[in-house]
Image (tube, rainbow, N blue to C red; front, side):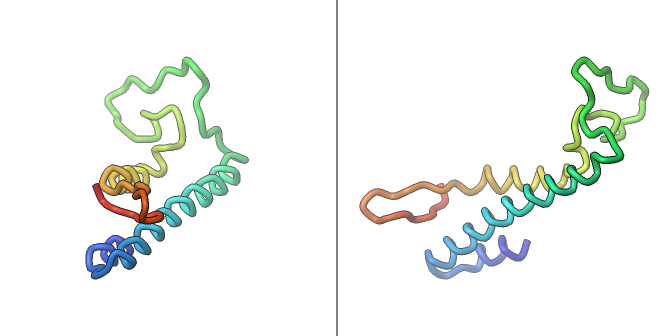
Length: 103
C-alpha cells in the first residue's frame, strides 16, 4: 500500500516509474515467498486435489473446501495483485527508450 501511495503522490515520471518497478519487484518477491511456503507446507499436506476430485457438496463455503488448489490461502494477495495488474500497464515508447506509463 505504501508503494501505491508513493505512485499516487509521485510528482515526476521518474518517481512514477520507480514506484511501478517496485510494484513489479514486490510481485516477484511474493511469488518466491509463496513457492517456498508451498514447498515447506506440502511436506505435511496435500496442496492440490487430484483431477476429478469432487469438492464438498454441503452448505459450508469454506475457501479450503471449495478450491482444488492452494490459491485459497492467498486469496487477498492474489486479488490485490490482479487488480494492480489490471490497473497498471507498461509499454515501451518508441524513440524514447523505455518508459513506464499508465494506459
